[in-house]
Image (tube, rainbow, N blue to C red; front, side):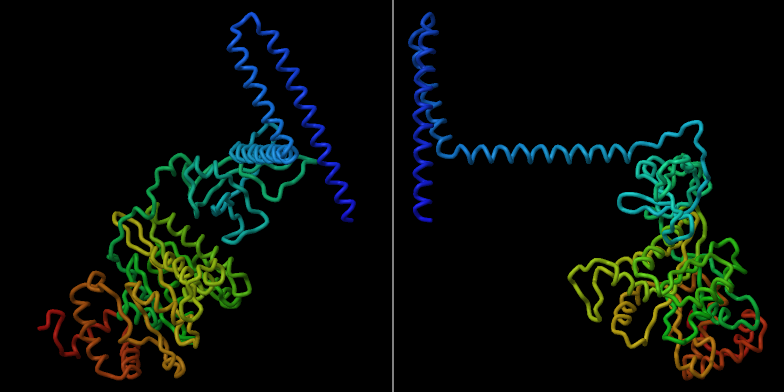
Amino acid sequence: NREAARLEREARRSARMARRSRNSSDDDSDSDEGDEGEETVNQSETDNSSSQDSNSSSREDRGYDRGGDRDFRRDRHRDRGDRGRDRHRDRGDRGDRGREREITISEDDVLLPVGGLLDILENYAFIRTGGYLPGPNDVYVSLHQVRRYGLRKGDVVTGQVRQPREGERREKFNALVRVDTVNGMDPETSKDRIEFSKLVPLYPQERLRLETEPNILTTRVIDLISPIGKGQRGLIVSPPKAGKTMVLQSIANAITKNNPECHLMVVLVDERPEEVTDMQRSVKGEVIASTFDRPADDHTSVAELAIERAKRLVELGHDVVVLLDSITRLGRAYNIAAPASGRILSGGVDSAALYPPKKFFGAARNIEDGGSLTILATALVETGSKMDEVIFEEFKGTGNMELKLDRKFADKRIFPAVDVDASGTRKEEILMGPEELNIVWKLRRVLHALDSQQALELLLEKMKGTKSNVEFLMQVQKTTVGPDQNGN
């Protein structure tokens, strides 16, 4: 092996010497020819140029001899890489042009009407024709159409798609070829909408009356203890099996009966299927649900599309009420679906997973000069999970209304299981009249002097003997002696 390697090195050395001698002879002949052809010109300049050419060519040849093969290979790979980059760049340009190009329609094409909610993703958009979750009949919308018509996530878009011709390969999703209406308006008119983030938020000023029937005490108690206004951001804090579902159903039915101008949306995240069916049958409103057997991505996408739909309605001047069950489970879903940020709080909660639920809950506001978004969300406590405690603590001070349910009352079958002392509304003097506020404050002082269970039992007993809250408050005013709201 050593002898073979030695012979190979000698062969390479002799080959290099032969190439060097051949190149030097070629250089001599080239310089002689150049001298003869340039005799009619300035002889000194010709000699200098020919000598410089011969010296440079000899240096280049010697460099080539030392690493010519290596330079040749490097140049060849560089050329290949440049061609590859150019090829991919051209391909990307072609793809961009293809996405931006509108679909042409011929006279013999058959157009089919479609409609649904617009869901805008990172590089494309879809019209969800079957609800809030992705489905096989969704319609593809290009970003060019989104920018052209000023479409936003949550818009109700109607348009037309082209029916595939006979023998034509069917695409997975049909593409939208024409936009007819956006939220029931002309597409050109919808461009002038103001953005939700630029609307001016105010405290709730117009009250949502929940009292309906004399025997439905849940809504009557809420009207007195934690009044709700248009634009309220409320938390219903409840341990398991404390009756929060019944409270939500009572609130939903009261809103549809007393405030038909409000658009009601019930968002159920990570809920049991039987609870979803019960809510759909008992509530006259829009029920948006993602059951617990679905992945966490479905929970988050349903909640995001629902709140964006509510924002689009508020931009048009509507009053929207969103009932969310529950914000704790929504936080869990974001903790699973969101990419890890590397900052983990106690209980295994990622710090980045708490921002999207806060964005959902923080959308509630009363808009100046028309429109409001009311959000009442349930929060789970006393579940034995440290994660649930961390999520609740993050939302504890963000709402301006809180209704606290007590598990001890529910175990004794005292419904509604409301903790009167721990429940209340910020700026309740805006929602209540002066006389009503004065009587409610007297009532609170009386109930605060009693045990929490005795206070609730006394309140429910007195309310059962009256037909309305007005009659109950008049009775309280006659029987209760105490200072008014001015301290007199």
